[in-house]
Image (cartoon, rainbow, N blue to C red; front, side, top):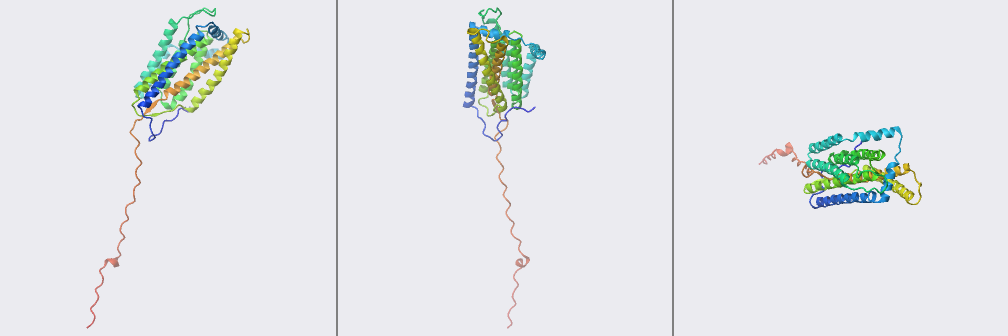
Length: 336
């Protein structure tokens, strides 16, 4: 498989020095973490604390009447495969990769990301109130634990793996997280807003962890590795198309609920929810791939200067001819 990652700068090229620039990168990552946390609060207020938000969210969940045997098999396997044991195993593997690469900072950041995201989701789910505004009594399911687990593990692997394969792993991880998120809605375990909030929780913890890594490495000379253009193009294209489809679909569901009853079917609402989930996955993974492409330390010193051109040895003096080397013949005295 072709690795999707952009090669860092060559040895000898100007390196991205630490210091002030690394500090401002850390501030930018922390700002992304705050925006993601604010997004979690916004989704909660819009989809849990308002009657219209609850009704639309529940319609998108209850419209999942997919009966195709192959699709059902994939969704069931995805749900059954996401267990606590598999989560712990992948976390240990991610930490081991970080230590093996001699990047303890990345290993610690990956552990903080996974533990913090899953603990926060558990805390929100058990303590956030959910008023019954849509006549569908059910306990609070905000955010989705399965989506949080899958996304946090994928984010951790992207963070600790070498640059050469991060793009490929990001695409595979995004596909897996999308399947998990859709499967939880299809099984009526979670509403679409639960999965979107879970992605934002993971992004918030990931951006915070990467900000700490940036602060730690702000004084270390490094070469900035840029995210792969192909991976970012795929995320951008899928995200844009899914966002347009999701927004139009949700608008149609809202219009059906408010002014034109029975305008759309339950299956249409479910598809609109899937589009919104796909857009959220593409956006969060694109942001994370960009954030995770941090400074790569330079292992050697400055590039050696090119050796100076060797000058040709001075030409040897020309050999003197034997005739020239002989002393001049003595002239005979003239006859008296």
